[in-house]
Length: 494
Image (cartoon, rainbow, N blue to C red; front, side, top):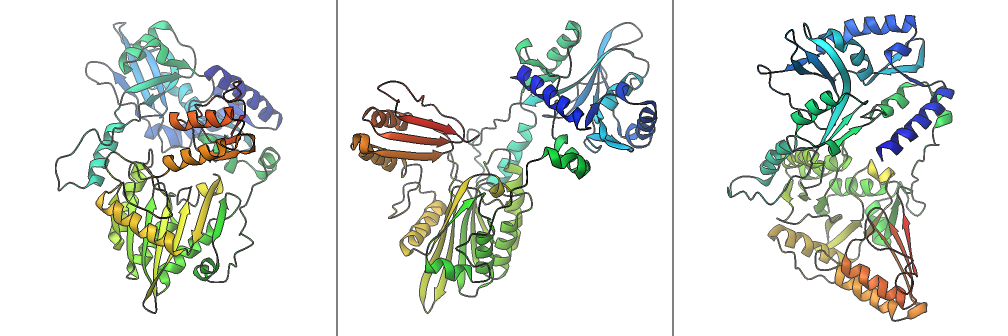
């Protein structure tokens, strides 16, 4: 895969060169450009660099996950080999564009590679390379039980996140082929084997591309970019009318990213202000970095609404973001609870309760996507909004059960994992299979890994039922096997 990635990168680079965009090394700069970078280095870079020698007096530095480092193989005055490291400071820009031609740029690691031989004092430079490591990110949320009943689960999660930063290195990526001695020194220091080392000729960290696109003149970038897609306001909703009244009139369905998330945001904002709304309950898995939804929930709590938030802290790589938002919500007066031990709460449900003339009414939103304004413009997801009383009562029961850790509640209309969905899904597949060639099944899901479901789908296919699966990621069912899965079609949307 690395080989293929490098080939694709080189192909793209050649096409960019034809459009006036050049990713340069120091030696490829013109004399005037080299002078500019030399001045830039002295004024903006040199003072923030922290080169470090690894020897008996200088312990091996901590290599952060996916951070860039310049590594050096050095010799001291006695001829003994040593390693030197120069972290690429995150405070510096990832690249520098030439002032007279912004399409010509040099990445920060290439600037540092040029000056690295002069940064390690009396040590003699042998070889240099750029490298980064990938660390294991699997923190076990529930295996390390905490007995202190007074400790908040959020504090427990914060401690676990600190452990993630120091988990084992699983991969070492190096920017070019280096000598056997240099490679062995690096592998011994980071405690990995040969098969965990990869030589990667394309940039080791490519996040710089997003900033590059924004910094280059539109005249250069526009011919190379897809036309931006802007989600629309749904035609069946009036932007100027009460969202609550429109949903009470009939059920509404948003389809992201084609529809905007704004109708739901407007619903939540209206609920935060209306005097007849008495409570808002919501489950949260992943939030935008700057979340309008959290700000609206805080405003609702400040307006004396009862706001209950089931915040799932175990959302991989979003744990720190969720911990931050959970504190913000608590400080505003929201009741924040966390997922149930040994389980993730992946449900996306929001329940708004209103009191009118002594009667309680409900608006329930159920979605497949996160409450995240940013990802709603990219991921295909559904958001269903209804005033159905039975669904609202099920929502009440769901949140009540989550507050007491009950996974086996009874619901009339909602199907709630871990026990509520699979049984009905298998039953529905079986009913279509009984129709033989007249049966039809279409399923859209993130992945398909459940053996029970796979076997049931194979049985349905063998009976002649046509099956279409639309899967985002993992699929453990192989379609097209005669007499078994020949009636199954799998479409990946990645």
